[in-house]
Image (cartoon, rainbow, N blue to C red; front, side, top):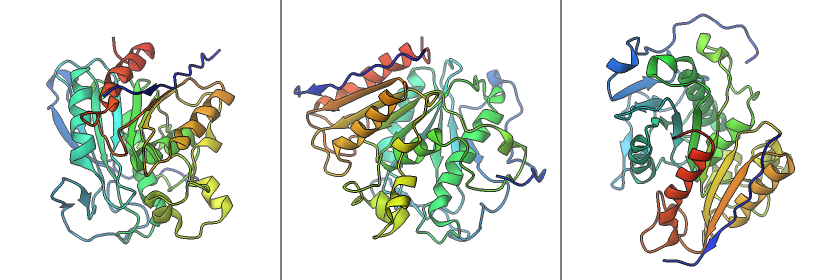
Length: 320
């Protein structure tokens, strides 16, 4: 039986067609001991599903390190000095309008590497950059990333049953929805990697966008994916809580009570859905920290969340 935990803390301290047989993207074939520390893995063997998007352009990097103009989605693999066999696929946020890589993904990668966890940083397509798949584009990329890492797990010294997800803001929505909808067919199989299951061992979500239903439909995430006037059915279909089932991965949720973008009630909805379906869940709600605090905003209690997450990872046998 699943053990359901509930730790809400308010702190006041400062697919359907047959596989085509096309070649998979190039992957490392050497033993784990001789692998390089960093490897860039293209997600698709050719043009991403549906085509479109920016043409022959490198990503555009803003002054604060956010990415746009994603013509070639990738999974950047970072191996720790002492790998423990666990891995985490990470997606930064940005409302599906940009990706806050430097602010969220970079420090989180260093943190996880120190714990012995191999990190796969996902650079996903943005729906408004001309992709014919539109709102499905980032979800196709996230599903593909999970499948590729599972397919090549042994080559990277990873236990395929110890691959988790870490998502920030819209990145939490992206990976959380994929992890809770394992049978969602967003694209036709391109090669043998697409026979791998979409499965996460656990989910860490920081200030995630959880629901696109009213009254939570005023975020960039909602407007980018569904437009200004989505139907109730569409808003529900693109929300995470309705897909929580017995057997969904354990969740670790962190959020600040003064978050002006992702209402704190959003993680409460996800927590409630987990409890109702016997899915282990831990939720920490901090008194202050706002939105987009990454690994923690100085002067706020959000600085403690990586330590709390380490306790969760230890409880889940993800780290020793």
